[in-house]
Image 1 (cartoon, rainbow, N blue to C red):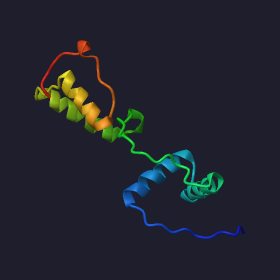
Image 2: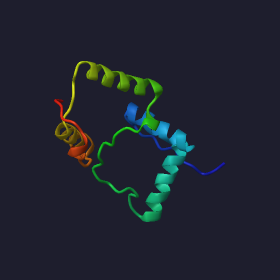
Image 3: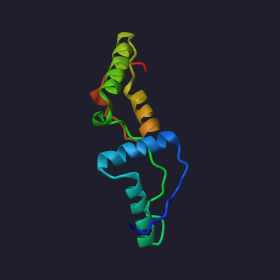
Length: 114
């Protein structure tokens, strides 16, 4: 048996679930992920992550469950039935605030009221 020690940490439940879901998709156990982190700390003689403020990115369809996709589509459909529209400027502002992304070409889209 390998000479090992246990590491205990209190982690937010949702963060743990999200991280373990990603690790599972990668085929990596939480213990292996911690082992990798510690190995990189030793190898780099420091913290191996580039620490910076990250931006929320739009959700890719591939990361959504069928239920989440159906819910989002239904909300959009109901919004359209109510006549809710957004101008290009309003969409640009929302995308900039929520996702820190560039702007759309105004000439390609009609105007509305968000």
